[in-house]
Amino acid sequence: MLIYDSLSHFPIADDKVDSLAFPTPTHDQLLSALSTMILSSSGWRKVFAQSGDEEDSNVLVKDADAALTALAALSVSRYLNVSSASKEAVAGGQKPKETSGTKTILLGLDARPTGRILGDIVARTLTALGVRVRYLFIAAAPQIMADSNLFPEEADAFFYISASHNPVGHNGFKFGKEGGVFPTEEAAKLCNIFLDIVKNEKNAFSYLQKLSSDMDTDEYRKVLEDVRHQQQQSLQRYEHFVLTTTTKSSDINIHREFKAQLASALQKQELGILGELNGSARSVSIDKNMLSSLGLKVHMINDKPSQIVHAIVPEGENLQLCQQTLQQLYEKDNAYKIGYVPDNDGDRGNLVYIDERTKKAHILEAQNVFALVVLAELSQTRLQNPQAPLAVVVNCPTSMRIQTIAQAFDAEVFRTEVGEANVVQLAQMKREEGYLVPILGEGSNGGNITHPAKVRDPLNTLMSLIKLIKNRDVAKLWFRANGMDIPHTISLEKIIESLPLYTTTGAFCVEGKMAIHKDHQTLKNRYEVIFQSDWALKEKQLKEMGIFSYNVLQTEGIEERSGQGESYRTPPFSGGYKVVLKNEEGVITDFLWMRGSKTESVFRVLVDCRGDDVARHDYLLNWHRSIIARADSD
Image 1 (cartoon, rainbow, N blue to C red):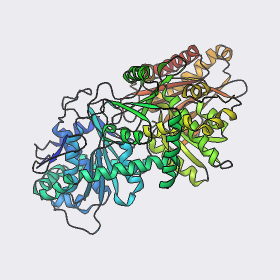
Image 2: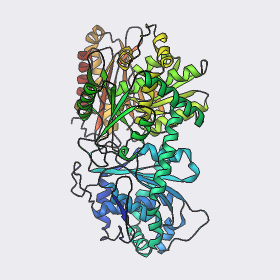
Image 3: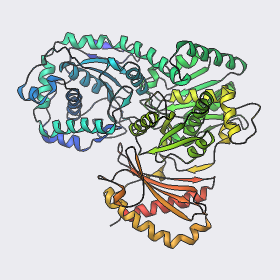
Image 4: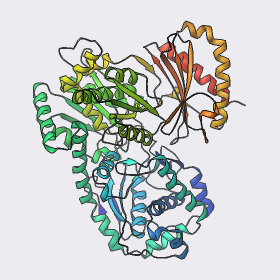
């Protein structure tokens, strides 16, 4: 029987139709499909669209990619020590056995078209293997992770089908538990299991096909029929978790008090929020209902799953539709002052806002989005804990503006390699050392992670901004700490105007990407030689720019090492590499950063400069790119 989703009205699956009943790919076909898959702790991704076109919005996938999906499910089962997933079971063709220690996996997917087929394959494969599946179908990534954070005993792991901000023809898988993706070591363990299965167990997929065809379809129908209950339960849990993150308390009475105070503030001055959801998983999440329940005016567009009208990454030109729509809304109703655009899984989002002096809508730079959230959360935490040691954990390319903000609240900043698993892991370590770490994340893409969340969430971003605008005490502490006059009316544009001035390369702009051909070990070794040579040639010019010395910082996982050369990095030499430039007093004024993406086939570069001198930024970025190009040449 075909089961439909009550939220999206899409068909979920038919328990009578076996999604694994297709011609078994050859081993060579599987290896070829595997060769184009990127595997990292942030997720496994590749182009799943059948045509191979990364911009293809068709629902169909190749047989080899469908088989890899089933083998990914087998890998998670084996990682969880499910007996029917063991090598011995596969080799002997054994059927699953009932055990008292049944494992449970929380399964969900974003709204890209290929996800529905992949979800059916994963849910059916896991069920055939004897795993209990709590299937949410289309659900925002922060929602599935909030569920596993609040109720870790109800899921041994989560399996989320998504390619995050990658183009629509991509898809992939994220794995984790207790609210966050697996840390690097656990992610590597799961990855090695998957690689071993694909490369060495040639009969593994045939085994899964046999299990699926022999499975009692009543068991799978129960999974599909339970989707609606699982969704409603998960949505309720997610709203509670967002309010817990906002108020820094799980007490329902404090949640009610927060709502009452916000409603009172909104009666004095209304605030409207625009969500341009771009067909993302947030279309079936709590956004509209929750924001409306807080007393906010809410307007949503492109709020049907898979209603993808522009490129998925919420950066640059992809925010222009939101900007234009917010401008139109504001002209009709001046309560509308903020708009947001998420990526497809809804775990990050960037903003547009109305400058009330010019009455124009502006796109807010991703680094400034993160800066505002850091400002709000540090201020709130400092008000509640005047003497406690505070800290922020960020990724390596996050702008130095965060350092300046942290200093205002007497907080320390710790840095990791790019990757949310890294910042989450280091933040937990710092808490164990006695720090309060209310905010962490990846400022380079505007992705804030507000404790106790372990994943980015645009709703948390919005709640931080609302606290800044509507709780005068939160904003006042920032202005006082910087010796600024406190505005009579605290508006978003006045807070933005008060932020430290920095000029930073956009993470997803054309100039922030390069294609390289050398391996990372060779590239970095050659970069260092060329940089030192250039430094000697440019020394006079650099001093005229106020640059007198430099230092190299290299990040791998949660470690940041100060020093250049191979002794400060380890194989495969793919961590972050940053040259910090200092003035005559030894104060850092700029940095040059580079790292190969582990989720996309691009090499990312970024320059961060104190002040608003665009020419200085462009000069340093061109120099940085030139050194990389020369290091990459034959």
